[in-house]
Length: 417
Image (cartoon, rainbow, N blue to C red):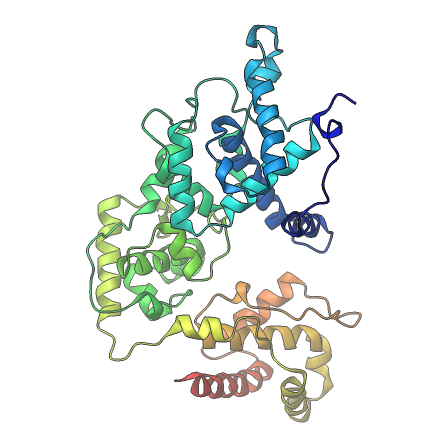
């Protein structure tokens, strides 16, 4: 009963606090994507540590005065504690240990969520003000804050923290300190041609990408580098930072992390898988930008991505295609590949062709599929390879591909302004 929560009668939670509570509960719901939820909570933990360590610098962020007052008491207790009497774990985690008071915890979450809701520029400015008064990173108390930000935080927050850190405050991870700084700017800082960021497809066409490669086999394997080159083109045409450009293209957060996706900066090429030297990379990207700038007509891929966000092939449209397939080839091939698999692959083929985007990023049906229609990656990969082929080796897919191209062409025509 000694908690500050019990010293006064707590007022009912405000509407803002109820909304915050519901948002956090939604993130914890089994239906929510676990990866994005973990990223959101990582961001909250990082910002909460900064707010704790720099209190009361962020006190004006919240209108919830009782919560701010409870946080006053919590921080005062932490700062008055004798470090010599604290355990090693307590000293190391001084700024990341949650308050014992529920009101102080609510205040910390409220302020942190309000800061994270700011526009990127305003968030960076707020972090700049807060970190200016923060205890140096190398002093004890930050726990795993910066490792958490590096490994699991959103790229938006990483970029803002990197831009905001003052000279006395350097995150300890050399990877976080140097690699992300290097990735912020385009390899070619000078603008080339008259194309705009909107004119860059997320999945570079083969005739663009081949400008950088002489080995078709290596080009086919370089998925991460194809993404990287598209991001660089957006940066060349704008003043966006690296991850802002990736987000502009619709690439998922942390797209160049993890298994087989680590080619963001360590870019391999040719069949020998040698690493690019930076001067060779600049030369190749310059050639690519010059090739793009010579286009007779530019396509607004950005508007297409936005217009067809969440698009999938309708049931009626697929029924018409399926009728044609059965008339030409009978039930054998349709049953062999499963109607659900063929429909999803057809939808992805059309969407990727219309929006200029990567097959694996295409929206999929959310409704449960009938038994036996589950997508099996190896079978989907085979269908994708056949549909992407200029001349599919199986007549069934020749029959399927032609109407898919016509359908996507009709969508392209209707999407023109």
